[in-house]
Image (cartoon, rainbow, N blue to C red; front, side):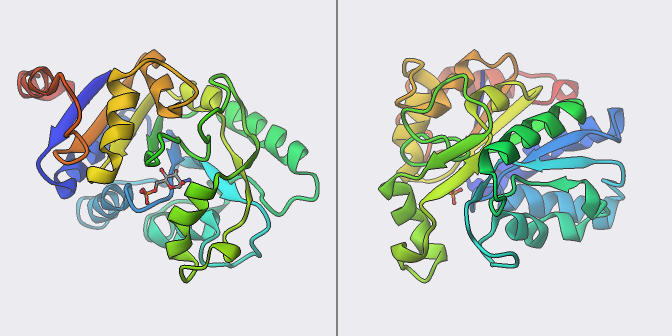
Length: 261
Ligand code: GLP
């Protein structure tokens, strides 16, 4: 696991966007795993800028969202499918038919989850999976206690996550769905490169547990310690409870330019 500590959240975007630029130069038909939440927005904006100003092309790319609320009507602004289109995919040359997300309106949610796993495998697996982290250490919508080998499935959101996300629903928790479909931790672990971002002091404990604590379903993001290529990019606030800070900084500063994250 590589830990990159940046001074401010906006300093993370070019570092992470470079990983995409290198991947797309190598593999124009790459498969990208996309995350919602406020944390990845800077990266999406930098990728859009590179598309518009530097010709970075997503024309052959396929994407898979991490998760989706169950039961929000089509077109709802907080539907994760709508969010990803609004914040990223509609601003680049991605074919909308290749933008995928779990179907939270499916009549048979369990079948929809299994279909989603199959679609990811049929596309060849995910090359870069971008991830945020919940204050309780959740990844995608894998709440504390999630099986460390779980696959895409139906989950119940914790009250804490619904409270955290109520800010997107006029502050009204009763409007936040109680259930979701989410890629499992086992699904995320199969991505070839997992990049987890964390910004702000309210993520500091979760980041410390994920990076330096024991691997435990209680802190789902800690499973990334078992990932062969995981990069954690955090700002100084989110890094404030880490213990090996100097080592992480020395290592990153000492890397040759060609290596990337
Ligand atoms: C939601 C998403 C997660 C995201 C988390 C943190 O629960 N399902 O993928 O990591 O929110 O959101 P934010 O980045 O806004 O802090």
